[in-house]
Image (cartoon, rainbow, N blue to C red; front, side, top):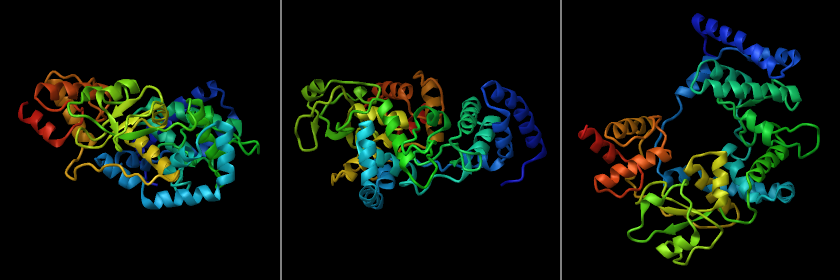
Length: 383
């Protein structure tokens, strides 16, 4: 643990003095607070981990190469064989496909191997004291104390990531309270144990409560026709399969699209990268993690675990998206140029995509909403 400065220690103490009454008002008993107090301490290392996150820009091919490796597929298939009975039992109980549960488990913690070793209470207290989204993390700390109050964990065993995500499914405390289950009926919803039963069932519970549709696919890679209107892409747009088929969108095998209800077209790395038509279950995965690349990785891994050998069409080798800092610069420049991104946080959301597409249309580019270094350079030159 990094040695804190005196000013930081004093500031943390003042924050904690103000927080304790709020926790009590939220129903946290003195007994639970006393159990938690040794962990409600200043740890500058938490903020160092937050600020030193590796900032890397990956296109969808590079992301999948890191997250859906041959080793992860092989390990997942072996894990399914070893855990077949409990996975099938959980899948039947919650009406969620076992490969989807396995895929989230694999992406989040490498099938339980990497669950985090930080005190969740310490992490959340430090992020609530002085950090980006402090109010959010203070609410999560109260949720973590509520978990202690319920007896699902004790302070010493509640460990997870530096950001407070816990257990086999990397639930934040508020998500634990909403979705974690005691599947093995031992009196606790234990997502931290080496026994993954409650952790896997909790992932299934989460998906089920977000309306997972059993036996339906997450999506499929497609070929877009010449002249396709790229302003229709993105998870915020829903289109009927009939409309997509009439536009000439086809599967990789050049067949019409199967109809599983309204769908979205995704081009996560722009017009020159692979394209996907994603269905209802993909949008459920996005509630777990809003990143499109994450959703595609979970979906693709679930397909591979089910036996598919399909490979996603690779992006051009020189296709590299912007880093977060570069994206923030792009957002600032777009807004100054009259294309308002509604903020400059470095993340590509619907507002940024809309602004990007408007700018791309004006300068004669394909309006795919994908930011590149060349696009940023153009904005800088015209500033």
